Image (cartoon, rainbow, N blue to C red; front, top):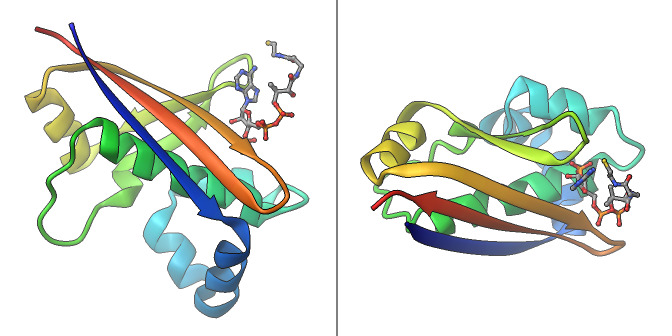
Length: 127
Ligand SMILES: CC(C)(COP(=O)(O)OP(=O)(O)OC[C@H]1O[C@@H](n2cnc3c(N)ncnc32)[C@H](O)[C@@H]1OP(=O)(O)O)[C@@H](O)C(=O)NCCC(=O)NCCS
């Protein structure tokens, strides 16, 4: 079994600025309706959006991403399992890419502090 590892860190203030400038256009480009519903319901939405942005980048790194053209970030969705732990749901082109690479599962972990949010992703690959 092979392993792909990825990590990313995002400045929460940068997200606050992007949300303020781009508003729904920026959010709709990067996040699924379910992600937006979760984050917008939080006391500090930008921290949760930043963690998801970091998680999407971390998953891309774990998949050893070589993408040409616009990156379909909504194809990497962060949901929650029954314990509250984050769960990755792939769709579209990213799901196809993962299947082509024999990815059998992706695990992510998220964290946010006052200034930054971070995420780590591990992709397990058969063979
Ligand atoms: C859940 C917990 C680990 C989160 O840690 P924290 O230091 O408060 O917050 P962090 O910023 O580091 O992490 C927050 C992220 O942890 C993730 N998370 C939540 N519950 C989790 C869990 N049970 N396991 C793993 N990750 C979890 C979420 O992705 C969350 O970010 P999100 O709301 O944007 O999705 C913390 O609340 C805790 O230790 N709780 C007590 C133990 C506990 O309840 N464990 C779960 C048992 S089922």
